[in-house]
Image 1 (cartoon, one colour):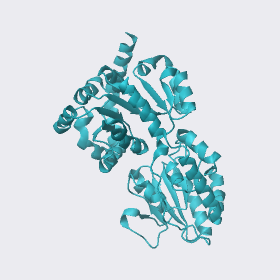
Image 2: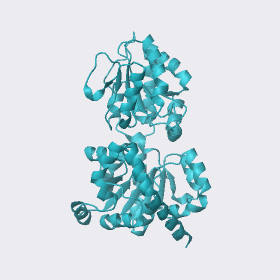
Image 3: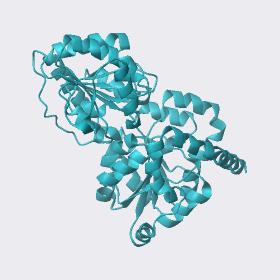
Length: 423
């Protein structure tokens, strides 16, 4: 009876908030909204007839639900291993248009759809069409109706790569009496590290359901870097500022300009987390009378600032780098994923705000593959790395070793999932 009223209240709040959410998305992210409108019917649970026919004729299906491009890229290896190791078809649902476009382009799953709005009659319609054997939420996607209807449909329900940040943990503590309506749906909670396991159990998840499997993000195919520009004499040094967030370029730009005064051949690639902000960053450069050029426009001889204006290929930017600065960390945004540059044997530098990637950041710093610095310390840190090629190489080597030593989460997670569906 209690859970029924909790869900009724939640659904009323979703319906009341939905118009405001849609207007906000349209105003702030007009281009993204326009890209996503093509899948609008899927958002309301109306899947194309050819997909429905495939769900009926093939299977078993495992439905994996993620949100953003970062999450989907983090589980790419996991998605590709499901058919190989579990002999199951994969339906991937994603929220953001960028994640949808990238997943379709890379063909990371057998079927890919826009995630349905979290209302009971909407998600129920999708479960009736798919009839998944297993529903898998990624990281911290606790959508009440998705989880409830998954359980009601007869599917096993699992969380993979589970995480709860310190900030989220404190927030969840305030609503802990309401959380059992979420946890009662799970048959398995596979988490990244022991710290996450403790937070889940503290919040009421039965300990028997919680398993530490490691971080799926480490299991990316280890790439190689071919730029080979780490020469003495500061020739052709390239720095990548990856996944920078709102307000961060304004803070970092003065540091980069000071460094260019000392290293005239320095090239900086700016790769913002959201390419919708490219125009905003161009305006920032113009306000300081600095030249910059977009990657899509080709090489610009007069500019040493390159704006990376494409999504889903940040790895290609990092492949050109000698040093990587991970964004979202010099403003209070919780940081971005440092694994890609670390896997490329790059020395990695990030700021104080890495709460969302605390475990990864801690490992890289402890093993000598990364440095965590404040904004006033950044110039000195980068100068040292630019001056000492051997230091860059040693840090890069240690960064890659840190990634290699923590691979294997995919196999551990799939072993648990296969055992779950066989039970």
